[in-house]
Length: 296
Image (tube, rainbow, N blue to C red; front, side, top):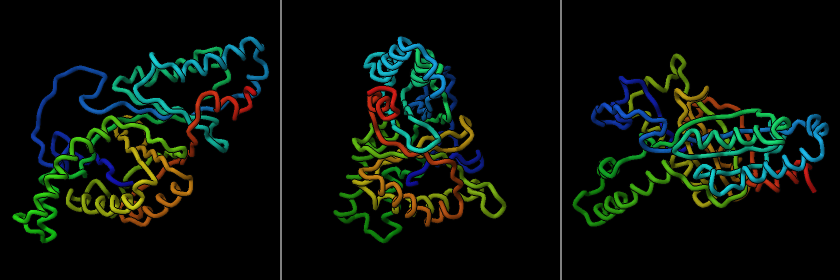
């Protein structure tokens, strides 16, 4: 999807994560990233046989604990969202973001440790970190692009555009590192890789070519502004896939349309590999229990 991060080998990516960044040694010891947040998507189903065998008192206590865990306003990650998941892959999902990996995983642990825990079966999870894409231009790179396109750097319009971009740059970084959830009801998640095949190895391409391909990809995504919002989390070295893509949309058909449209971009059509898709509809814990027929 648009503005996707990349993690090329050292020969193609300077230290610091962005082209031209100076090498630096950070000797800090911590489980929290220097910038950005941990992000986990966790998917679960209810084991109906175990639910049926639970004593009524434990079942009721379990539903209360389930709601309390996900509604808790004190002991919770800075971002927490639940989805109803249709189909057989899962019954519900929990998406959590926080600087601390323990805060993020704590939700998962409390769900399983509660009275309803024996009947809650994890079916899939994905862990990653938020980051600023190396393909998101700096103000200087944005200005250089305008010059390459033939714009006069002395013109008032050029200077206004560059100044405006520079003013927006901190907010663009913040939105990627510490994202908010959009107020939209439809969502989906999927993991993805970039190919490492002979003749189609993303990681052997020069940065300029990768940047060109991702600019095309980003342009396709921007056509869905106001309809779809996305979050890319990097999982290189953290999970089986390299990136996780989360999309939120005003309507479910927008999810279909953006994914289909962007499939034709060369960055996807030639170099991308996709994992399983999980569709979600934003819900409260109470709505999840009602939808799954655990309570009236």
